Length: 221
Length: 344
Picture (tube, rainbow over the protein chains, first blue to last red):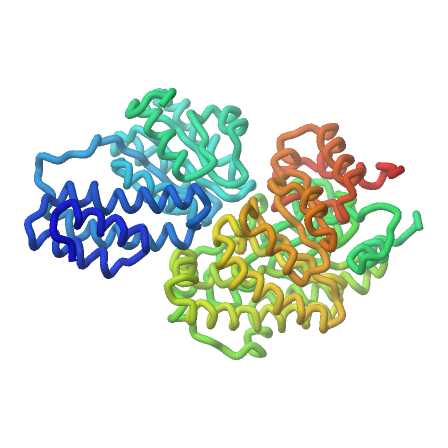
């Protein structure tokens, strides 16, 4: 077992990266027992490990099964550390409403984006799959979201995305939300045509897009 | 050879004999052309009712064939027949939206209750598809009848919660293999039954089994293994088999050559010319972009199709599932271009 907080963080990041949920939980319990700062442990350990897994995913060393298992390990650790976070630590507070549009129940891609958004500090409201256009808008208004993220795998249901934009326009609230779209049959061209604010071909790029659109990073970065 | 009947032309391509030009087909199943225009134009049965009646399914499949110019007749019009038989709850969809899984039958691979295959074969809509193939074969002897099955990985991930299943491919390989073995045994029995009753060709659509989701190792260890068991069984039944894999195959591409199919159909992202160069033994099928078919104009569809024909792609087809709002003009531009393009 590691001797210093830094060693423990490194071991924790490695445990998440190596998909070891049991070791991740053990190390988080140890961090709590030793009185290490929970927020730093999450950031330097769990999230660092998940980011490394995400990098391997981008590099096509890891694929969907590995990323899902790594995120299970990360969430197991978060469950242990979260009650010990001191009040001084707040995340940036940007909110995303996410879901798979009505008519489609394929949610693997949406779940990957949700995980990566949470890792990046977004507060994510996941509406699940087969979500009516109006429900996205209602929830976004209710939680005062910054971003509405729409996913679909099916060509049949792509039109549901433009319906969300239309509902926002009809309600004169289009300017209050950034709408981003993703899914295998989509393209930047499609995003432009329906008047969305952005498209991302991969989960990690969706996070970058959400950061740009909410002013967390500038577009050039 | 220019007056080859569609059934002979497809049969010759799949057995690697020479033809005058590539056939143009749309297999059914995940890749079906039961678009709104067909149901509006032809006095055909409507969806979702036609998913549930063998006569309705057969008549709609014939209407698709007549309205589009595709040189085959394909059934069914969804990917939910097998998961439904295996206990998942399906949403029948609407006129414009295909049926989908409303709730998977099991939360994990270990929870799957293995049932008798012969009993399952008599349940759900397997009989509907088999009977539809029977009618179609009797009424259309010159046209190849294609029965489309959901592939082993996609079926398993529609019976077990897909996120659990994908994780268990790595964390609990024994449980995942148990489910895939079970699902594959059902698919083999179903393929044999529908081949015996009228299907000339079996198509296997396995969109979840893409290397883009699974990665090369899991693609090889699971997808290739079980798809090949199914292909071998179809061959033993004396029929050819087409396999469709979605997505950009990236690092799993080399394993496409290991599939025991008679033609491989891919997404628009895959360069079929290069695939053919690298693996000359493969019969390639595809891959007119479904986005182009839905949003492009007929002239561009024709040009793209002509290029595929001139590039020597063996069978011309849409690249993936068509949106039901795809216009008939564009589909006819695709099929028309294949039939009129002259090869020098």
